[in-house]
Image (cartoon, rainbow, N blue to C red; front, side, top):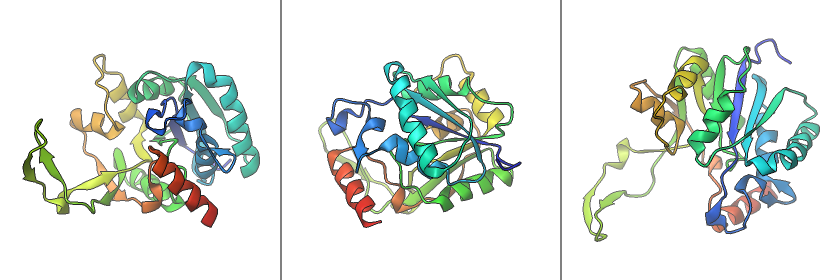
Length: 234
């Protein structure tokens, strides 16, 4: 392991993936006989600075998760420490549970969706480089292509937002360890759809790097079909 392998990757993988309609946690859904969890771990293992993995899964899936993790490690021919923890009802709870397993060598923490298995290595590297330069919170973003409007409860348009200032947020989201730990130590922690949102609520500056179209999140059956096609072309 590299002497600078001071990055821990937390993968919250306890989501049920109800919009996929497959009656199993989304992280265990397969593409070409590989689970999303295994594919994502394989990609993470390509990042030299990563020295620790923490995966949060439903409590009843902790034992099956070991097989998926082991397959990814064997395929990558790499051995690094990892922990499997019980996830919570929300993403926020899963990340909070994961932080209890941090190692003393983990200087930076990347929180990464199990449903984003194709994130380019360069995105991981750029997030880590930004943390190295002193940023406390770093997120990858891409420009919004569609016109975005706000609507009321009657589905009537209220206004059109200036998309030149809008960005779609992806993962991995990077944090200085002490910052993420402090955020999650809050007693009345509010669930958010991303961890950088908690940093914003705490008044912490959030920096950005360029994301990638390959970093799309698998949420719907169409996304799964797109991911299968993407994997088959590689």
